[in-house]
Image (cartoon, rainbow, N blue to C red; front, side):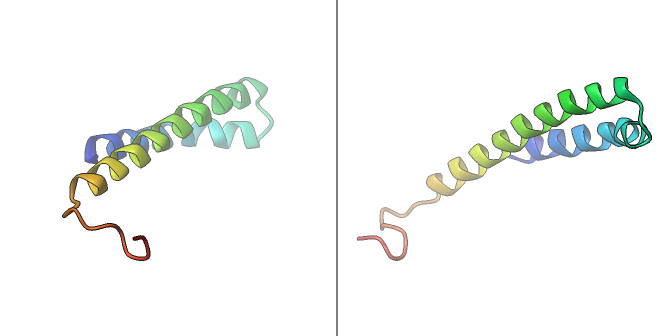
Length: 68
């Protein structure tokens, strides 16, 4: 899970320069940002999946609160 999160942080950090360029009107940077945002979306989904997997692995056999 931490590896997935670190990957997500790296992608966001790498996008910063192009985001600034795109905000300044650089169309090529805007294209790169759109691609990077798709990569970030996929990386965020991977983190979500890992968190869910770790949560499900901690179960003690009892249903979650509010579910019977």
